[in-house]
Length: 468
Image (tube, rainbow, N blue to C red; front, side):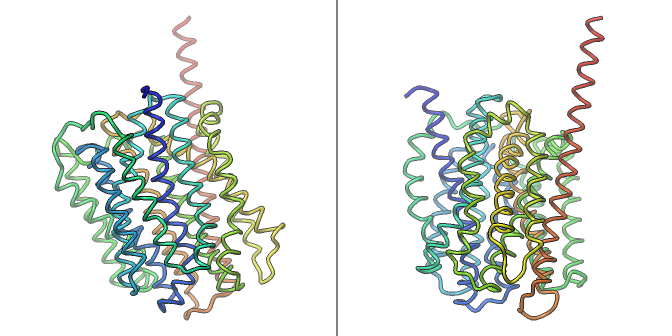
C-alpha cells in the first residue's frame, strides 16, 4: 500500500469514529422526551443525560490531548475507543436515570481521549497546506454531518425504542476497533518532556467543577452560595494552574500557544457555534415534541435539511478554505447561524415548514458546513507537531464547555417560570440566547478578518520597502 493510500485509509477510520461520536450525541437529543417519560425525569434532571456526557468530555479534553502527545496518539486512540464501546453497551441496558447518566459520563471521558487523538493523528500525518486542509475538511464535515444526520436515524430508532439509540454505536465502535490497528500503522510518535501531573490534576479538576457548576446552577440557583462558591473555587484552581504552568519545565499546556490571535478566535468561535446549537437543539426538541406533539421521526426530519447540506458539501470545504481563506468562511457561517436562529423567533403553535422550519434549518446547515471545518483548520495552523494534541484538546474543550454553559443557561430560561409547563414565551426567550451568542460570534470573526487584512497590508508594505 502506498504512503498516500495508507494516509487516506487511516483518515477513513478516523472519520468513522468522529462520525460515531457526533452521531451518539445527536441521537440522544431526539430520544430525550422518550427517556424523560420512561424514566420519570424532570426537565432540569433531563439535561444531565446530555450534560453527563459533556461533563466527562469537556472536563478531560485537555488531559486527553496532551496524553496523546506524550503516550502515543495511536495507543491512546485505541484504548479510549474500546472504553467508548463498553460504555455504549452499558448505557443501553441500564434501567435507572442515575446509571444512565453515569454511563454517559464514562462515554464522555472516552471521547475526551479519542477526539483530540484522532485530530492530532490527522494533523501530524498530512503536511500543512492544501492536503491537510482537505483532510481536515472531510474529518470535520463527517463530525458535523454525523451530528445532523444522527437526528434522523434517532427518530427512526426512537419509534422502536429509545434504548436502540444508545446501543446502535456499539457494533460500529467494535468494527472500527478491529480495523484501526491495521490502518493506523507506523511509529507512534511521542512528544518529548515529562508528565505534568500537578497541571493535569488542576486543569481537570477546574474543568470538571466548571461544567458541573454551570449544569447544576439552574437547579441550585445562579445566585446561591453553592454556585458562587463553586465558581470562586474554579477561579482559584485556574489561577493555580496558570501559576504552575509558568514554572514547569514541561507544562501540560504551553500558555504561549494562546498568544496566537487566530487560535484564540478559533476556540471562541467553536465555543459559540457548539454552545448555541446544543442549546437550540434542546429547545427545539421540547418545542416540536412536548409542545406541538410531533413524533420523534417527524422531529428528526425537521433537522434533515441541515444534515443533508453538510453531507453534500463536505468534500468541497477544503478547496473553499484554500481559495477564500478560513476567515471569510467563518464570517459567512456566523451570519448564517444568526439568521437561522432568527427564523425561529417566530415560533407559534402552528409553525410554517416553508416559512420558518426548513429555511432556518438550511441556514444552520450552511453555518456548520462553512464554520466547523474552517475553525478546525484555523485552530491547528502554525502549531508544531508535538503540540497538535494540545491544540486539538483546547479546541474540543471550547466546544464542549460552551455546550454545557449555554445549555445550563437555556434550561434556566425554560424553567424560570417554575414548574415543568412549557410556553411559547419561554421557548422564544431561550432561542434569543442562542441568537445573541451567534451575533457575538459574528463580531469576533469579523474582527479576525480585519486583523488579517491589516496584517496583509503591513506585509505588502514591508515587501515594497525592501524592494525600494
